Image (tube, rainbow, N blue to C red; front, side, top):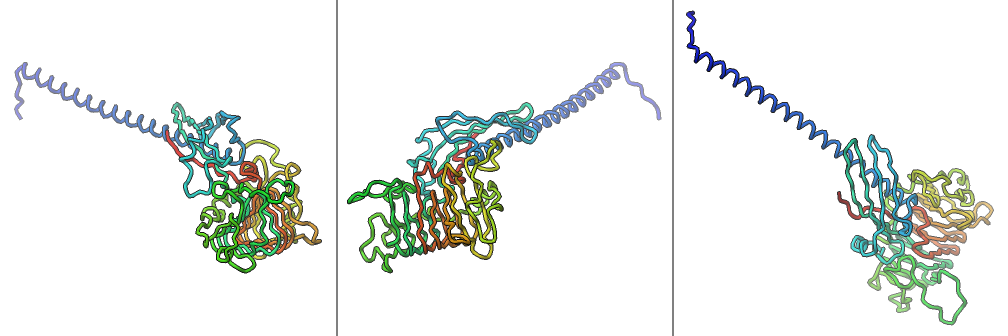
Length: 411
């Protein structure tokens, strides 16, 4: 092939064009590299931000646990409260808490809940959780609401209650989802004994005062006294209500503790083995003191929780456990049926301060005294029963009775 020589000017132009093309190519490459590096940096920043947000959420969860089980106090007089810098999964969080007024919590209450904003056990606070991951910080602001409806209050029966022995209710009523038979045996009394008077004043309902001004019997079905439906017979006490009166208790009031509630109690329960024997559960042998060391909320700080599986047969419950301050409050959960009795010798009559929860049928065959609250899916009373409920604020001493949840959440 014959080589053709270009004039000098054309050779310079060709060289300039080649340099320009190379420069454009280098610029494009540099732009692509910069874009890739920028994208990588943005992805890294996004990942760090997401990790920091997760750490902040963990701080909120920690605060909810501590509030629910008493490791942080829901006492506005002691606030602001805080959780110090805590390591979590490669990052860290710190939490600050501040009390809110009643006006802040009223619109946040569930309208279907039997709890009212006027209950002394209803408290709201703001939780600010700061999550840190490397150089990235994220802050989460949460309004937390604590209400005294973690457990039933007073004497609550999910289905039917059959009463055939004196049943004294101090400061509370009987709230049943089904029928109540034996109304004549049920007597509401004032929570504090007073001098006998010719016409004693009405007994206030301290358990569900937002619903009922006076303590009485409330049933989702019918109330029978001496075999007759009391409202049909026209002799019902003014404080009573049922399906015939058109005012049955709300479904949420008589609903059984759900699996999540029972699971939460079990996760924070103490070992009942020392009190369990061939005869059943001896309340006298349950631990009388609360956890001695403050720390992670594995156990409630002010009391004890015991969860016992009754198995196939009904669990015998007996033994006189002292009330506070001789013994800390206890929440005893029986999974299945339970019989309150006097033990092997018949003299160990069951007494408990705190809460007794029976997911099956509770049969009272020996005098039973509960200072606090009692729930049973079904109730059969053959021997005297006393339930004393002093006030919502006092009843919160039963471990698990506080319900702590996030009412709103924002960053």
